[in-house]
Amino acid sequence: MKLSIQVNEGPYQHQATDSAYNFTKAAIEAGHEIFRVFFYHDGVNNGTRYTTPPQDDRNVVNRWSELAEAHNLDLVVCVAAAQRRGIVDEGEQERNGKDGNNIAPGFRISGLGQLIEAGIQADRLVVFGD
Amino acid sequence: MSMLHTVNKSPFEKDSMTSCLRLSADGSSILLIEDAIYAALDGTSVSDSVKEAMKSKKIYALQEDINARGVQGKVMDGIEQVDYAGFVKLVTEHDKVQSWV
Image (cartoon, rainbow over the protein chains, first blue to last red):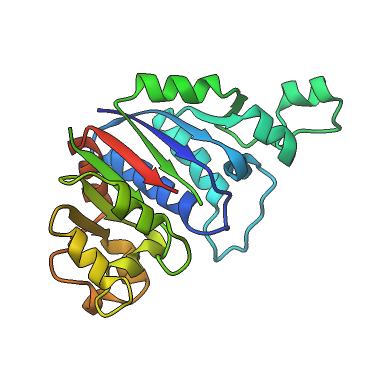
């Protein structure tokens, strides 16, 4: 079955991003296809490679990047939510005249249309958040 | 058409569980995750309303989140515990998923 995931909460906030990660992993292990993981609202904070959690804590961002690489996942960050929170890729850096970018490997910035498409194309859309 | 509802906040913190119980159709399933686990415990001020809902709805609770909170022995009879694989299975077995975030 084709599944899409929506994450509305940032890392290290409550538990939603951990639940979303565990669910995504379990879905892959069960042989399902992940059509897309869409990061919305504070969820866009999952997509910055500048996080440096203590060594004995889980690295939420790297965990998503590694899962994306291993299973060719499409991790999409909402552009309007990203602009508000300072999540920047090369294109956004150029467009908004920023002095750098911080998007994590495996993530890309795009629009809400990607969420709508994820809802239409997948058999189920599961939302995690506050 | 069967629907799976997920609730992730404690009923003592937010009213999403109350809304879910009030608005979900008979015959639907409700999965309690994260702090919503507290709604699955016996002897609380919401236990009676959850028991009442169990007459017409099936209620599940995520095992990992029950264990994380150390409340394994307090979960009400009739609530089925599932792991993440079971969560995925519930999602695929129901036509739609409504997350009460």
